[in-house]
Image 1 (cartoon, rainbow, N blue to C red):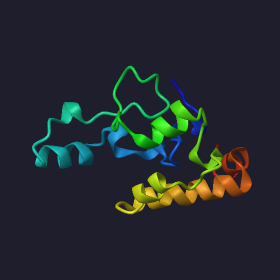
Image 2 (cartoon, helix red, strand yellow):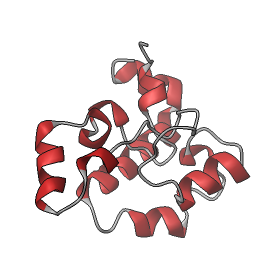
Image 3 (cartoon, rainbow, N blue to C red):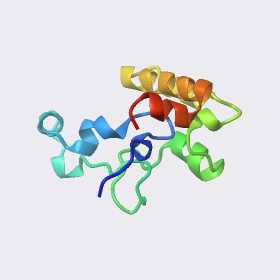
Image 4 (cartoon, rainbow, N blue to C red):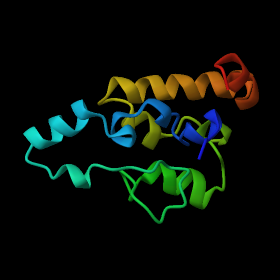
Length: 120
């Protein structure tokens, strides 16, 4: 099934279209094997999936707050953006910091304009 670019953007701003966990790249699976983790457990269907399959972070506080509690599509849509949970989440990984920057741009120009600008 072909999915839209919008579908691959998570509420927190990550881009699942290039995610090595979702894509299950050889490099990613080899990394987890080296960590003594069963590669069959390295799966994620994405935050926009029907949630009956695999999700990398099923207890994600950001997903819970944004989608299930506030019924928003992206954290950038929230009146409390950026919240402490989101800001803390960005401190440990560069790709999380890039996700936050993506959300700032979405907030500034709007999601639809962001998607047009970035090839959706």
